[in-house]
Length: 337
Image 1: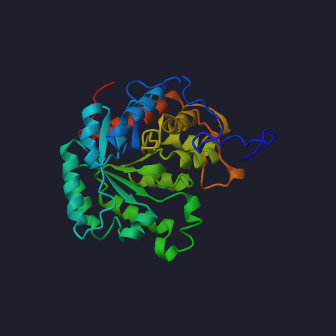
Image 2: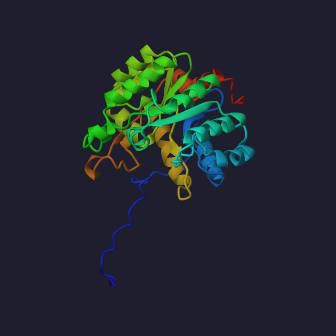
Image 3: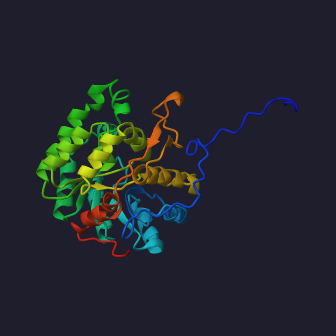
């Protein structure tokens, strides 16, 4: 046992607040007419919802489009009706032989409670573990069901460059290459170019804005969202001026999304850390060390958050107009605010 003269190390700060930000300080609402919509989230359980919505409201975020499990969706909708729209997702761990039939039944169940977006998780690891592609194989039935129901396609294609440069590069025969993954996506985008398509995580490649520009120019049905937090802080900040120009140029095609994920051990401040970073990044010219630990970088190279200070008319579209416009293509509106 240490005696009184033994120096005591200060407690290690939490990974969601390494620099001592007071997330509970007041912050102005975004300069937006109508409600602010977070178009990419994962509210995973009804028991998480009160803390989730309280944190969102503090940061001026009113409504959410969420990948909530079907088993939790009705309870969330009962208590927060009108403030959440559900994205249809499969039971991710289902490895049964009839998983496609089950996935189709879940899409129908989600559709019956109002869902009008279907998510396809086509990250390299997911593709390898299930042997799935968007442009061939068993997902063809699912894609056609989405088209027949006139729902919105949503996909996660690609991953951070740091992953492609490290773990995927170690076994390209297993995981494939980014160019192969994007060719697969383009095959599907071409086939279903009459249906709206939402590309998650800045189209999965914020490191290559030229690629994203070509995709947006080639596929008028494509829009993208601004999730996820650590990824965007790192890569958007790195190319701050280029990213600002890209977003202003494509201001009608980008939706605000945080990729916020709820769990039993993620309290108010954890959730707030993600909203804080997004508000600072898009609304302000803030420059400072990111409060969130980036596990893709070592301690000496943690990212600096560089805010884009987007114009008010662009923020209006990012936070509200573009999400409402996308949902309207499938006959849905939040209908308030």
